[in-house]
Image 1 (cartoon, rainbow, N blue to C red):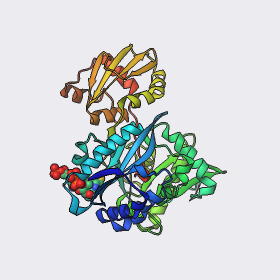
Image 2: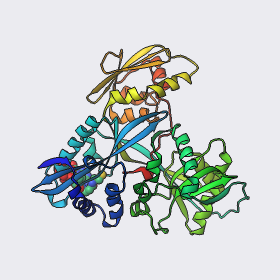
Image 3: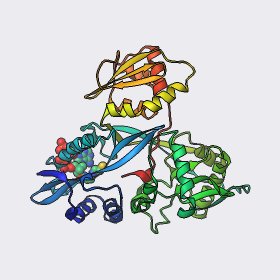
Image 4: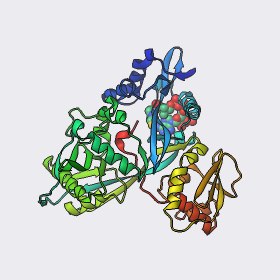
Amino acid sequence: MEIRASKESEFEEIINLICTVFVEKCRPRYASQIYHDSSFQLHQSRVCVVDGKVVSHVRVSDRAIHIGRSVVRLGGIGMVATLPEYRRQGYASALMQDSIAYMEAIGYELSLLFTAIQPFYTKFGWATFPQTNFELELRVKKQFEPSSWIARPFDVERDLTQISQIYDENSKARAGTVLRSEGYWRDEYSRQVGILPSLVVEKDGTIGAYANFGFPTDSDGMDAFLATYYPNLREVGYRSQHPDSLLALCHAVLVSTRERDLTSISGRLHRHHPLIALLSEESGSQPSFSITEGAMYRIVLLYSLLQKMIPEFEARLESRREDPTPTSFCFILENQVCTLKVNHGKVTVMDDNSGRTKVQIDTHRFLKVLFGDATFGQLEELNRFKELRLEPYEIATLDALFPKGEPMHWICDYF
Ligand SMILES: CC(C)(COP(=O)(O)OP(=O)(O)OC[C@H]1O[C@@H](n2cnc3c(N)ncnc32)[C@H](O)[C@@H]1OP(=O)(O)O)[C@@H](O)C(=O)NCCC(=O)NCCS
């Protein structure tokens, strides 16, 4: 068995392997990841070769994500596949170990993957993270008042600059969204996986809001993966200074579903996104929510992660009225240890265990606080149960550093 980076001469063999293991109809998507993702490099496709044959494969996509104002590097694991006749011989496990070493060497702070076989990845240090789906039955067909905002299809040359501005503005207030450069928006691969919005609302040349939504019935040109497996409403953005544009977008989405005689709309948005409330009010239907734990993150380099978050931590402290008591924490996360000191609005991160209060925490709970899914205050009962006891002033400081937020990873950024 040989574990190594892929070679150009192996591209078709890799794509065939992935089509054999997953689904043939998604071949354009798999091929595009290799041929059309401009960030792709040979060493991102890791292969296991037995007797000259590629029998198992893991891909590590190069991405960066926002955690508020901070940007951290993320290795996106995907296309984990072993040919059926070579399974249960440790090949995929060896590739996962290799991918971890590879990500550490490159300097990724985090890794993310999406899966239905969580126990396989738990063994290697990935932990699940929740994502919220909503569904709305559409019963009543209401007429809507005309709006000063005009809804129309997205046009790449005319609209992309404004869409990416809205995207960046929205991302800074969230955790987990992928950093999208102009190259990323315009990449052939991004088009293949449907990153471009379908609908915008505009007034006097200003785009107020956009949506990326699609329907299985519009199969022409749509990525088979998205068309088959994912909800209609895949992404929404709007300018916070033009909240009325979101109402116009909501009407356009409802009209669009109605024109297709669809009886429900589904999406992956955070629980309190205003568009869900608007869709509910304007359609006269109540949304139902479900939580999936198909996303899994791994903390690759804790020290580097906390270092990169210093500007965000300090901005969070500055926005508080009260200056927290100076203190220091020693985070102990699986086999990684790191100290975070807070002193009059300044945050220092050190690669040692000198922090006074020991915060021994598993990856699952750490991810919750890192992405704002829960705070230390909210986890207090669970933390006590897991024998992590913190004083009220320590919880207050940790809640200032890790406040509640609305984490988001848009579906079209899957790898
Ligand atoms: C998952 C997969 C890559 C594992 O490849 P492999 O080379 O056989 O993996 P290894 O021999 O290193 O490890 C086998 C382990 O995989 C785990 N595994 C495989 N399929 C699994 C499944 N459907 N659910 C849970 N665990 C699974 C088992 O825990 C098994 O361990 P065991 O032998 O101790 O029971 C392979 O089964 C495969 O290609 N499956 C179809 C594609 C897929 O599901 N890929 C992952 C998408 S996120």
